[in-house]
Amino acid sequence: MTDRLTLATWNINSVRLRMPIVEKFLEEIAPDVLCLQETKCPDANFPFNAFRKAGYEHIEINGQKGYHGVATVSRRPLANVEKRGFCDMGDSRHLAADIAFNGSPLRLHNFYVPAGGDEPDREINPKFGHKLDFFAEMKNWLQGTETDKAAVLVGDLNVAPYEHDVWSHKALLKVVSHTPLECELFEDVRTTGKWIDAMRRFTPLDDKLYTWWSYRAKDWSAADKGRRLDHVWVSQALDGHIKGTRVLRDARGWEKPSDHAPVIAVFEA
Image (cartoon, rainbow, N blue to C red; front, side, top):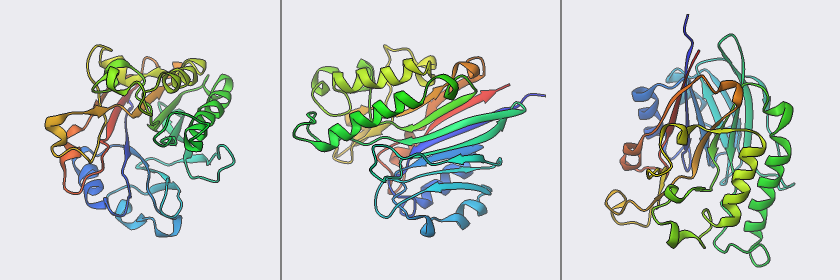
């Protein structure tokens, strides 16, 4: 019997503010699991009832007031929940849980990596230094026994690592999210843990691939100055099971949208 698992990841930019489009997404796409970032919501105010009404009974959250925050909602039970802190900052930026797939636990990591501020220099911009240190801690942890098992890492990782992950490689080389230093660190985390970039498995490196479009553009779609900030990584144990990924670009144009679009990944066993 085939086991099919659909995962989605979405930086929602305030879960309470965007709940109408979250409900629209759950009704139309109906993933088994949805990982949200930048929920901007303390745990006590999370809209549990709305998700349960939509059929997502299993909910794990790591939130804080006004900033950051991640949540994983699922039709399948979630077990062995972990909320890891990074850089001694006390920020809510990570949530991990096991979900059943193909008769075994699949470890699902939900990340919201720091954006890094505006200036790509840690000496004058502590936010950029925080981002670099965050990736260093990810690298040290997410390797060996942590990645030898069936695992998926999703979320807003706030780096567009490849030339065609941004609208203009030349124009963005000195812009935070696409600087050579960030891209190198990002790839170091991924390759050290032997993670597979699932999105680029199905979209060639020469093709443009975006998940984020700035609110500043008058017509975001026509300008199409996007970046791929949201990612799906898969451990080697799941190499043969990832069947496809796609960006739901249309969601960027829904009413009162997030500046990120959801990314959907399908697994089969």
